[in-house]
Image 1 (cartoon, rainbow, N blue to C red):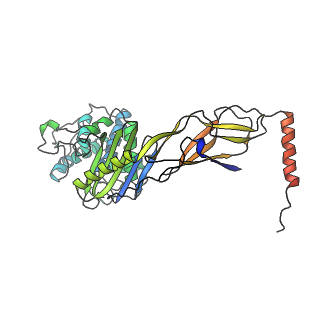
Image 2: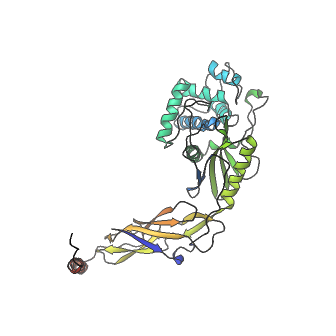
Image 3: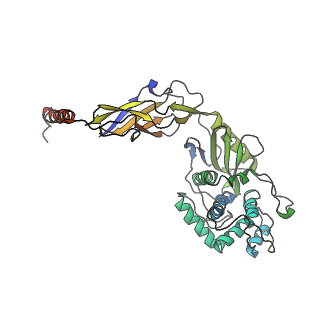
Length: 388
């Protein structure tokens, strides 16, 4: 039987709170995520597939990072530049100004894709890893599915406009989280502001991320623009213990994109505060025990529970302990036996495991006898069921 136990205000040190101030973003699609507490702070059409433009280069970068991690290539590996790759410069859009006579290294290409947003660099990587851009795009789509990016399909490596090139803001955000967490040695390239391959760039040597020079803790990731989807951006900002990732699309101009990105970062850090709401090892509730040498067992968090609450909060959150009980003995100290579900107004419920505070051994003969008597008493003294 599933039991729910409502916790009172004193059990958690913090309890009810003011709802978070709603943020009215100008983006048509937005997803904002606090990596520290794994909390979605905003989801506006976040799962809607959109033309991602150059933001989809993050998937090409991920594929190259994975090839480095697997040892299939090294930073010194060189790739050939095809006529198709060189033609991307003449076609317009972002470029690192590659020529067919070049043999750029993987290190060059990483900088070219991230800092210059080079379409030519993406084609070189695609052909170097998969033989053709078409084959690489198919691999990108397959890999996206394996990573849980459910609203992403790829027709090319660069984000060049194509009906088959789609990503949701949530997928872009989740992909960004992966790049940050899985490739900590490579991720810092996203914060570099200049790269000029062989000093060829009359322009385009500067990173387009508008937040990097604002001294607000921004360190990535990518901007994008198509006529269909407008101006978009995937960003990451770290302040103190917290890091947020956001993805937005549908802005009317590069200026509006920069303003909205800064507004979102400011809101995410100023509207929410990181709080410890339950201490490791401190009992928050008890659960009934079946056939044990104790009638109940204390429930405690194995680790401090920290989560975001609205910065202007006062007077408390609400929480419930959920477990299937009574819990059969024996119970080992530290065994996960329940869940603590914490509700914060304006945010998704937060769920954390609770463990047994102590060992509870199986009861002896007298315990079993008394339990059997209780079961029989409950069975035979229960009121008759109504006639059907």
